[in-house]
Length: 86
Image 1 (cartoon, rainbow, N blue to C red):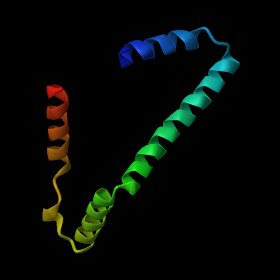
Image 2 (cartoon, one colour):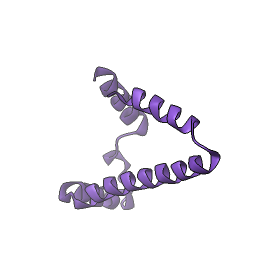
Image 3 (cartoon, rainbow, N blue to C red):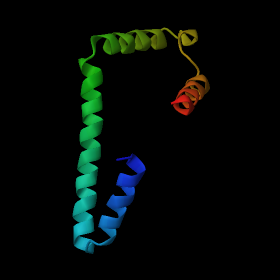
Image 4 (cartoon, one colour):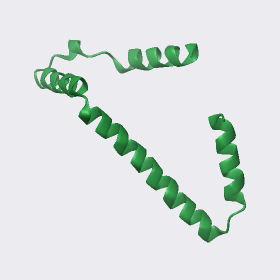
């Protein structure tokens, strides 16, 4: 099932709940969000390659080597172009 359809179903279900149950649902959604963020963090920490890249970037930043970094606008544009192609 597509994400948009699932979200629509979730919103319909929430609309039928009492205020007390909506608060519980919000707490659970917050928990799921935090869990997903932690899983992503652990995935990065477990990757030797990514951690090495992060360490290299931190060293370059401390040395003031800003030319080693890609400007944020270029990164955003690249991500947007790739998402439109998918």
